[in-house]
Length: 321
Image (cartoon, rainbow, N blue to C red; front, side, top):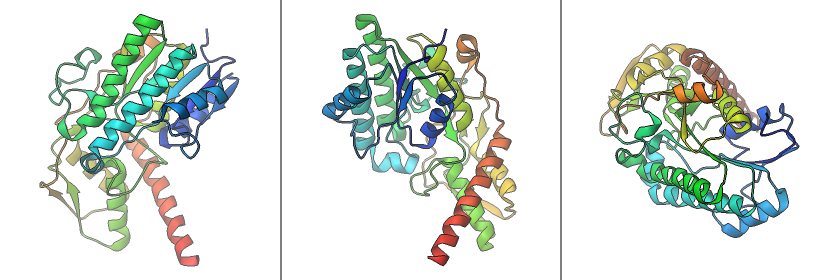
């Protein structure tokens, strides 16, 4: 049975990095309509705008991808905004879904919700076993609370809500601003620019000794659409590859793929964030037969190629403009 067949689907954040990939996959499904609300018309942190969206789109299914999010630097600068915006958007959307009796609400969570010192691989049952890493805590706690709201609404009102928890995403179309981006796009940009400028040293944030897990954006989109179509559970579900890598090893890998052969330095005055990240993804495989297919090396090659094409196009436009 398909839960998306002949349904009107609202995808918040559908014009974003992950959202574009999700919408492309939905276009191959037998859905009735896909609606992507734009922030210029609907401020989802306002209840009235959310009500207006539901009145216009009349959704059967909501896939909530929209988020205020960034890397460690952005989280340090905007902890209040990240908590409020993410909490408010989810709060109003879930309540509107209850009032409108929608068939399914899909909430995208975050690995930042897990405790700072969580045994690896992270299992969904340990989500509440401690406080998140302090830098990302406002964002992580907001997303964690929305999972509780979904479970409570399921018990009291019968709302069919999913909580999917992806690890750090990367891929073509990512955000490459050095002040606000996540680690992979920041490293790719630094090493590519070092090659272009003939630099013999690149300095990276932190000690490099912490570990992370990364999921290619197309694999994440496939998981989200497949879960939206077939999964019905109030339990959180991890989305990842199960492969953990130290940041220092990631930097060496990206430097090699970019063609950078100089020295890699580390600015230990900058925070590392959570010590380790690796997810147990067995629940996703068991419940809806999903497993990530793209290796880290191949995903990085695709991302580097995309960034070089984009940066070349951007530089040419400035030169000829």
